[in-house]
Image 1 (cartoon, rainbow, N blue to C red):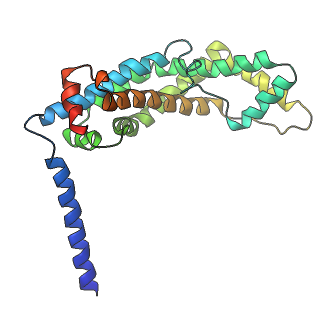
Image 2: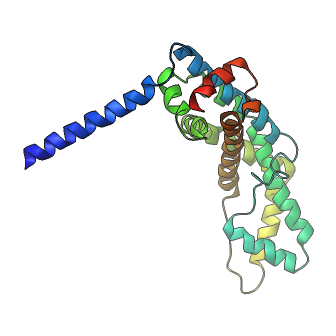
Image 3: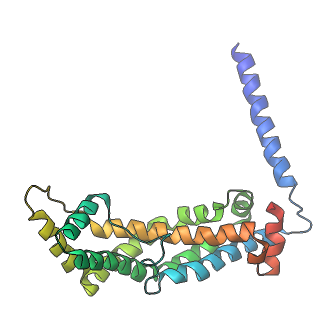
Length: 233
């Protein structure tokens, strides 16, 4: 019984490897070199970084982009609504805008980290990315950069809060809310929250550009992109 099980597992593993190799072999390597495949993926990510991430660094890059706009954390949504109910809508709006302003400041630090990660894409990485999901390249980039970006974004966002007065405004907002009778006090870590939301926004925008290149011929604006991404059509 054990021998039969081992035999089955060996056959299964060999079959899986054979199927994977067959997929790889189907890539027309003669027409597109290994170097070109890796270079094409790097170029696609470079375009996403240049075109989409740059948008996020502009005034209202987060605040007026519904795909990435940073809304309040769950524990502050009740703060927001309560303040609006008692006539403090303008203050609440300003507090929300400043959270997004801090993210816009932080994203300016992202490009050098992304560029280093993109340079590191190997042919082995490129093959799995090319044959992967519509956001496979973005997922790869996230796995290589998330920790470094968090470390860069966090102090920038903290400083930005101080620079634009967000720390004062939110301290005021939360103090006013906590002073309302019969409400439970809140004290969220807004710097950590906005840092993570900024990261998510960055990867969301890069994924949009990647999907466009994968699915729209008109988005393949160079000969290299046309040649490489034709392999996954």
